[in-house]
Image 1 (cartoon, rainbow, N blue to C red):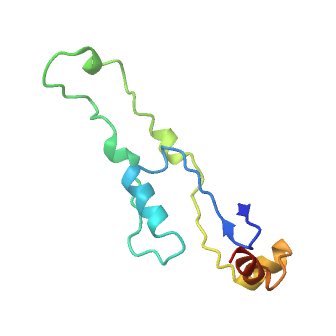
Image 2 (tube, rainbow, N blue to C red):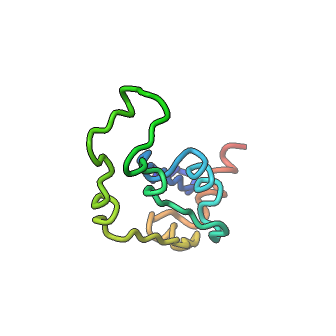
Length: 111
């Protein structure tokens, strides 16, 4: 969180690349703070290799070396939760100790 002198607040968001692909991340940033219209569908088991693999040609990457898909990794995590917090200007000013007219005074000084 970055607090500016005029009273504005900037919120930074960081994500780990396993949480979402590029399109999901863009969707998140564009709709942050809005009601969720399209819920994300994250099921990594859909991308798991076939068991057993069915390669079409011999390649070092397709040589069978045992079951490489560790199903327990997908089921051992606790369920995720998400929340949306609505913060009013008054709550922000009270929390950050920003005087009520500081933005207006700052704009007048800049003009």
